[in-house]
Length: 202
Image (cartoon, rainbow, N blue to C red; front, side, top):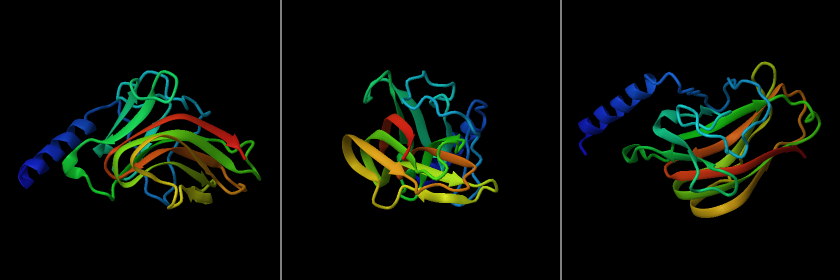
């Protein structure tokens, strides 16, 4: 494929995405104030049918390049229940290790003051050639600043081809958090499935 053809294809894909009113694409870089809307944690098992844009209901998109990834509710590959959430890079010519995307929910910190926010879930990967897949957590104060660190750490990513395995991430004890955001993340090319997420106070 020539450079010109690749550029035209990418421009067409971006144009199509911009014309989809159902898509809720949120772009946030690490360290920026998080735009996530506070809700009660929901659809953590990804068993609800897909929304009109293919996203799991109750979840929004975020990350550096969400427009390059496909988000699906996958009834064929799952740990349990009706389905799992699948995130995969959609275009091979954009297969750079430095791109990423994730799903996001944000909840109030009630019940977590002075305690750790713990997130567990199951992850399966295929062809994850970059940093890989993980579950992420961000705690934010009222001004949108860091109130408990950003996770995962460098040694917590799942890459390559891995069958379902349990994943756990947690913050230090929280103090002064106004909002806690979390979700699945895929950093680089490949595919990753996520299922049976749970949140608890540690």
